[in-house]
Image (tube, rainbow, N blue to C red; front, side, top):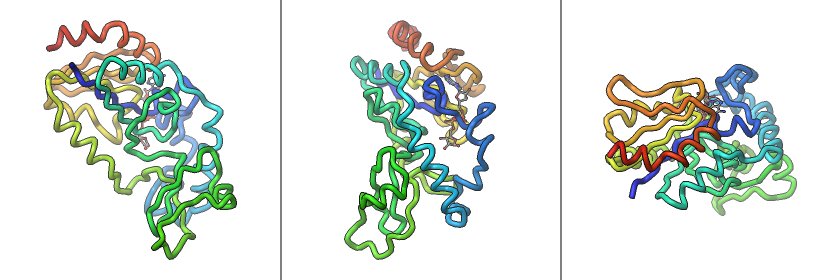
Length: 241
Ligand code: APR
């Protein structure tokens, strides 16, 4: 049976109303990366950084999963699905699946002394502190610096190890579905170019791939693209293997 490796970016949550990063009007048009998402500057901008993530975390409860998020769970009923996302929202979880968040999870806060992470749900950092929810290791000696558990530019991303192990294990029987990702930060299309798995991209504005391999480009929204996948994946697999 084929494994389905789904790699999702901000575009999978666009139809739920959550801004993407690089589309016009996106998050990086409204906020400078160096102000709110960079390891070398975030301490200097401590309050601005927490304000930026608090607003997005509190607001997250007002958005709902769309058909694409639930389609990931639907596919896992029939296939061995490996679900990887660079998104920090929880819409895949609320759509029924449990993704590997390789850029972290906006619901979590990390103590920068003991590295323990706490899921504070849709609260602000200060509300979680007031409610005494932040957990620390017994050895923790300085509980003053808390960081959103989102991977900043210039920060090590420990889950990339798991991503590379999955890539190294790809075979011709596997299917990689990239959905709603610009691949500007994690160029999956180049990472898997040497593997002859079936490669499918769902994106209304971007074709991916390299000169060395071929992709099935579904130039559509995440929801419509997954409707196509649910209807035709068996056919695509049969034509590929
Ligand atoms: N359905 C599918 N794809 C869509 C939709 C939609 N409805 N709307 C937009 N897209 C596509 C865009 O064409 C674009 O290619 O989603 C992609 C979003 O790209 P980005 O905004 O760059 O988001 P993403 O690829 O997730 O960014 C990756 O960059 O800033 C870092 O850590 C941040 O995880 C983020 C990473």
